Image (cartoon, rainbow, N blue to C red; front, side):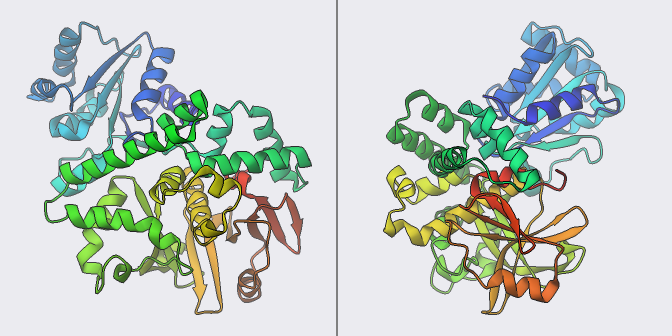
Length: 434
């Protein structure tokens, strides 16, 4: 399956100031697949090392001289590592701290060797175990679950992607048959999500029960990680918080509440668990803005946030939704529909590279997302259907007078009353640059 990060990997390969690359991302988002595919396509050969499966590899890092490391690995793997022509992959590098440290010396002494390091729980390991991290000596990239554009690629809808992009720029409506087709595919995506193994299952069989089994397998692997790579005292709390994320998205007020996890729950009891989930890449926080001022991050609340899962399909699976619930808008699903839609938009904006926040004005108004696009601070209102009636955006516009606003809904493209209408399927177009 095609991934957009592939072009960024090529840019890294060809860059003059290339440093060792650390590819970060949650478990099962496709890191190993895309890097090995990149290596087989773009290099003469690949030397793949998995420190979790091959424990003995750690012995090759008793000294950190890159030339010595390369000689040992090449002999062991029976593959010659050629400068500029071989991709060296260090997978699950968090299990070998010395290998992580060695990246500093590859940067300083052996830049002609192309090294990519990966680790599903690298963020957790580095933060919690205080490994020696090669600050300033590596480049970072993040891989997320497949976004909706990649889902369209996987379902052979490249023409539809181009039509959507053109309409986003021109603000002209997408042809009705294409608009309806895109909305159907969007609803499929809400159920399937973007985990590559799940999308592959969906493409092979279109069997939604098998999709659900694949999703549950991933959820189980996440819970296993919480038990294996966490402090013993934090394991039950981390599992409890993760199970609670989608529950709170079904509430009218989606601000994350510790008291909703358990009676009397407080921040100091669960903050380590929340941090673990974020470092593992399987959940992320959206903070409230106290003031609409630049820089936005300096004006965020330190205590008020919404909490989302890293994949909208896993979010659906965690609530045991059926595909018909989403496609036919089961009335019992409607309370959760708004939260699921927000989860989808949040994930897509992260893939787009947009740092987002939300804003409230007491009980008067709430704007789902606030972000910078170019020089402007732009409010983004999210509606899960084509019903766009809301006073929140009007309150915000009257108070802060933005250059324009964005409303995401099931309605077609358009621009009216200084509000840019963006269909739910076109969120992948909202970026800092067109």
